[in-house]
Image (cartoon, rainbow, N blue to C red; front, top):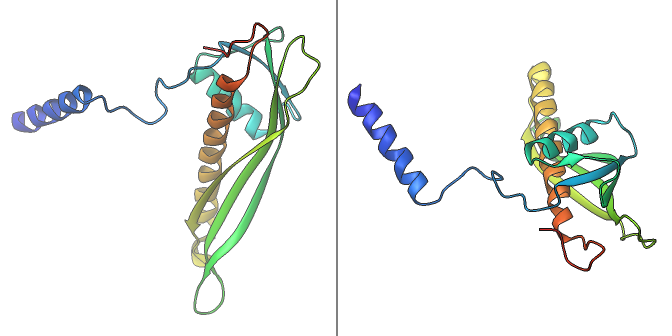
Length: 166
C-alpha cells in the first residue's frame, strides 16, 4: 500500500515538473470583464458561457469596454454509420453559434463569426434511454467547449487605445 502511494506521489511530481496541466486550465488571457448580450438570456449556451466566464475569472458587467453579442446555437445531427438492418449506429453532432465582439464607443461592428464543435457518438436502438442521457451529457460538454472557445476569441479584440487586451 505504501509503495502505491509513493508511486502515485512520484508520478504527480514528474507530471508537475514537466509542466503538464489539464487542457484549458490557466490558459485564459483575455479581458477581465465583458458585457454579454445574448439572443436568449436563458439558453443553455448562454448559461455555459456565463459558467466559462466564472471559471476564467471574467466578470459580466454591463459597462465593460467590450460587448459580446451571442446568437442562438444551432445543432445538427447526421448519421455516420448504420447497422446491418439500416438503423443508425453512430451520429455526428455539430453544435455551432454565431457571435461578434463590439468595443464600447466604436460605431463599427466586427463581422459575425461562427464557431462549431463536432462530436461522434455511438447509438444503440435497444437502449435509447441511456443513449439519450449520453447525448445530453455530450451536448453539455460541447456547449462548454464552444463557450470557452468563444471566450478565448476576446483576446483578439482591439480596445479603444489601439492595444489588444492582455
